[in-house]
Image (cartoon, rainbow, N blue to C red; front, side, top):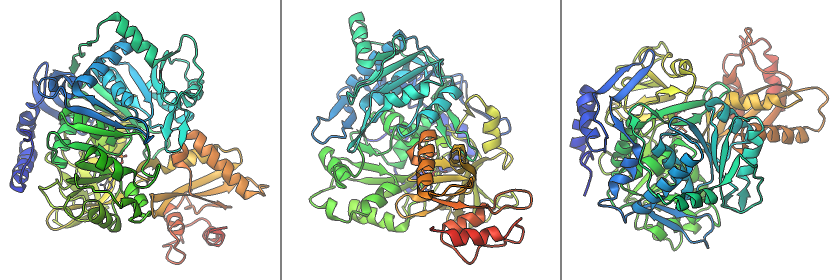
Length: 638
Ligand code: WTA
């Protein structure tokens, strides 16, 4: 069994690719017929990259949850939709069939309505990886509310910034979340955030850890109590709201090269088609298979490949609450054997971290059920690729190296399992619909087969970012002005003679730490908030496990004697303002930063020093004070 829009051979890929580029409207018209629509589209595609304005399936009406739930109730009512494995190995896992998930989503949709949530309202979701997180996401989509999931590692200040930007009046959270041996007090973080957000009308709190929480009368209610109210009202169903193709589905905040994270907006129809199409085709998913994506729903990978991709395909999505190393580094392998997982989709940083435990944790694990492996989030180094291939895939599972971004909604460049070959550390070929181009320093397209430069995309695809919430100009200037009429990815890439793309990493000031996107300006802003800090500069450096580590050069007010204490204070400040994920690995105190005569920090030099380079720092003659560099080199590691 397969899907009508599933590619089943290399020859078919070649035809699909050609048609999708030459006749995108005809191509996506055919693909979109495999979904449930309340009303069909008037026109498949309308676009310009100058405003930018992109409309996919204009005039169509739909609800994505009818595609993710209702339409599977006929043939797949009893198929597991979500398998949930808890953090605690002793606790019972939970399996929700399509029928059960549909019921729970409808029930919680009614809870949202009872609490005053309406179509178009923004709802912030800040929860651990429990099934109710997926239920909350789908319930928002069902009633037409715009969900904005915030990763559980972000601080109160980060949440407040996002709540204000989205003007979200509703929050769904948990008392706490389990992560390995820790219980994280999520509601407490929300309480701190809400001091700065008096406009929030309602917080719905799910019980998970049962730790004490403060519940404010008139604002905070318990998830369980609200569900009971719906039960007594006696109407378990909730008709899905009819949405326009281009109505917003969700906002997801992500980091860029400026200090303030931006709210990437995806819309109903295009995102749905893209998440589904890329899910089915990248992984070559076959109905009935168990798909295990280890990402958190707080990131785009979780949105597209835990929730919307697998569920729109009637697939079985495995959701894991814990961490890969708790109670031991064999956790993933146990889960794979327990549920007979067929496809594992994880991040290079997780692979490298598990690799560092050696082969011991793999003993006694079969892993025979695995058919396809995937990676995402950062370039995978060859050593990790081979380890994954040999020890996990036993050299018989294709590894799909999927390159994409929050802004792209789904996989853009990747080999396709069993269709196109995988090459270590090469993302390889574009998905149908994707026309990548490589640009040189002069801003010209490099048209020779072999090329190296900045990666742009020439045509819109259904999952492309539509706007940055509340600030369309920011969307235009960030992605569509560097190269006229092109979407600029922010990544560098090389292309080989047969058209395979290798992603070389970000070319802007965005770091990729353990697969998490963090802007250097964001970290600098946080460090600069510390009372004694005068100025700082943050760069990335290669890190064995995390891919990139964070290196901060800090000018501190005179009179700071106990530098170690100051370091701790700075780390605490960054934790408070952004979250623990943004804490620098190294802080070096300096008396000056290498600047040009016009006052620009020469990051190139700082990057080289952070990487351990002492000799070839490049041209330093344009510096205002070349002596600064020598001093920084002397002070390294002190
Ligand atoms: C990087 C995650 C190399 C890239 C889905 C991109 C990758 C950023 C790969 C987006 C890959 C993602 N190979 N680099 N297979 N996948 N990246 O928005 O730099 O969290 O721009 O989306 O991750 O990160 P984001």
